Length: 396
Figure 1 (spheres, helix red, strand yellow):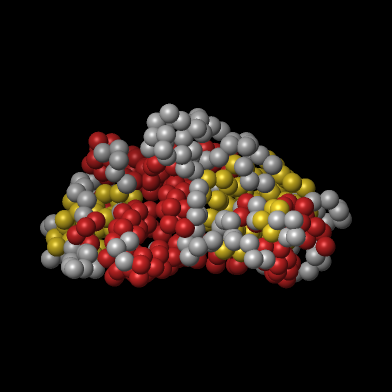
Figure 2: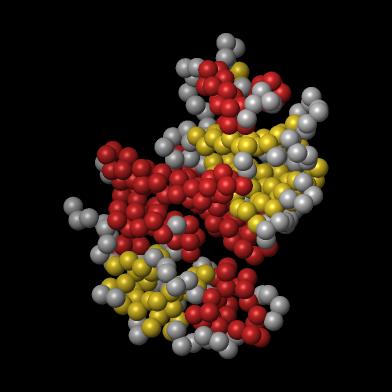
């Protein structure tokens, strides 16, 4: 059997020469609404890639269009996109995609034949091809899932590093039910605060992992366009982006497809110690210093991106005033819905509240460790029901 190569992923796409202007880029993006990115060529060879979202975001800034419209299109070009030969094996391509980072998954990569541009490839298509090819044999299935796991963990690694650099008293758990899963988190530091998201996509395993790529890409593009300070607006934009990507424009269309995610988006203002949150079927626990009760910050009981989620759905921001020493806890339902214990019932929110109250004096990493020990003991011999993500931190 011939080894599959990057040739399988070639998609014909418009391109632009390096001596053309940003006005031509605008015109091409206007004519091709489906275009995620635009290859830049020099003598037929690709030298860069222009991301639609980054380009349109830059050109929408005050005076940028007047300043840059007549300038070369390389002004907003990614000068180091992933470029692969049509003959590159899919497994090698997957490893290269992991090395090149999130931008390859979001904006795609360039495919050449003897150095000449032949088309573009998409990160999602790469994932699909990996999985479909490996289904032929069980060994190959496991190999593809391992590649997908590497890609998914690479997607989370930048956020994990930012969490650890920003929140000094923190605990984070990400446990997919299978090798890969449908939960993900996003964290980004800004000059005056930070943004965080915890999300639970429909399903687990391979289907859930595909959705995390779509959702994470939609969130990244929304942050690039609108900034981090309005979680509710970002949630609405991500919902629209997911509905578009999944073809779920109405509850009646594609009745066999109704996928989306539950999530909480957070913006923390350093100066005001103020937490702004938007919730899609996912609560937030807060334990303030000097108080015994754990507050539960709730939100709208409607998910993101589903077929029956209105296209004009707008979530509301919740504002919570924190103080030094406050403990904040975000979690997906894989924690509280897990069946176990002598009565074979769900772990529940009450046990989580009690753990926060009982161990509040401990460093959050130790508190998280004790909580997960209790959770695994409670689960016992029961099968894990879902992916699990937990982010807890103390404001210092």
